[in-house]
Length: 190
Image 1 (cartoon, rainbow, N blue to C red):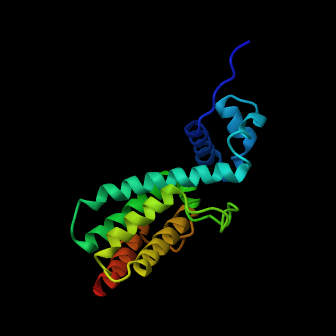
Image 2: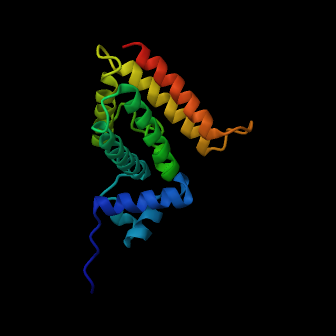
Image 3: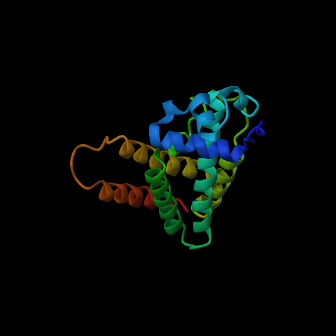
């Protein structure tokens, strides 16, 4: 009899994220992930309690990846406006290449985790990196600026991924216009 296959957290994350990106968030189920990693569904319950845990793995992995993208930009410039612009563009690029995973970044309540668990390590690192970058624009309290930039970028990218910009015109131009306006306003408060 062959030895049972060992399932790692990394394998679960990779499988769940691939299913989400290829087939949609609703397709991420215990059974679907078990099939991809080569085990029977009951075996996954040793690693995750329910489907929401799989979605949390995707969100955590997305936060980690985006944090790496943003952190790589951190040393590239000392100009606060250039830094905020680069961060928003990195978020948009990430959202374009991983739209389903990026949709889960701020979905704590939808994952059944609001108030139930502390922020994931990935989100803590991403938040720290973003606050550090925004600190140059608003040294006293970077949180409002970071929230504003994040909300605008996430909202724009969510609408873009949903095909919600149907009035014509150039969406790239609209993104750059909104970004320049927002960054100008945030850096004017220094």
